[in-house]
Length: 350
Image (tube, rainbow, N blue to C red; front, top):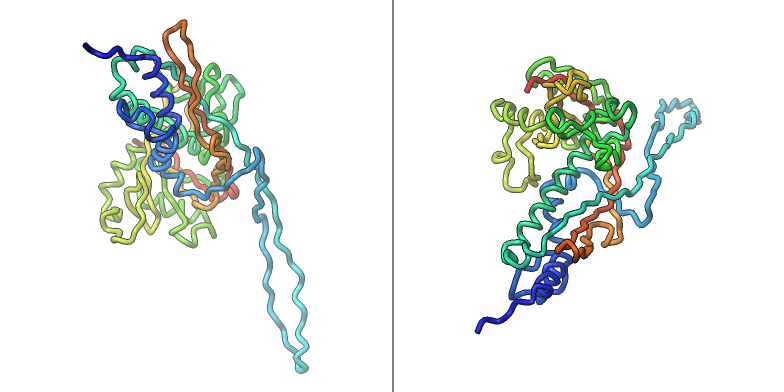
């Protein structure tokens, strides 16, 4: 006689496993997928998590200092009695940016029938889908975030959402996550480089020059390009591909190589429906892309020290709909200390 399956118990096992319960929980029925595993996948797939500095935050807002002016050095003039002339006093000029933790949250209904009939494969599907979407959203926020809401989002660099013409635009009805912070594109204040064609080595050299003192150490620079431009760069002989780095090199996900000592990353989060100014046009008919050259120590990611706010999955039962709802959420902060350490290469033909 077959043993009757307790679907309520199966559902609870799915919840326990997703929330990170003990390894023995449901071990005979499903693999133990935990919130820590999901966030680990996110960190791996979003290269900026490892590329940019991180700030642990034990409160919602923190003021982070930055230098706005440096000290001066002077000539030391010695007299016959070795009583030198005193140098004029100079002090560091300081300013600050504010990091504020904000929440990204999702609402994912799961039918109980999926648990009942597909529990063996359900966990891996849920884990990979949540992790992949969160990694993409994080990358898109850090690159494309813009808090501008005027003119029904037409003034936002991503433009207003349109299902057909601009699916990556900002949607008011969805409380769009790209409105949380100003990302690298919006924050850049260095003189932009206009490619007016395919991205070339000359454009990259001009962008490096535009960074001024921030380009002194090429190891501190990163060039971030959309996928279509990544493919074109792979055909440039001056690109040192990652397979030639050497055994001691640390290679991040998305890294394709180096040009002039600058690490190059390709991402699907950068749009290619922009106009010559690097924004989505009002008519949603842009055909251009852009690249971002940044000093990697200027952007700053804030992470909560409270584990539950770092990433967690909540649950809400809806028995009248024969389902439960997954509620993954994550707190994140982002800011740019030196906006002049970011330069955009715009009007790239893709």
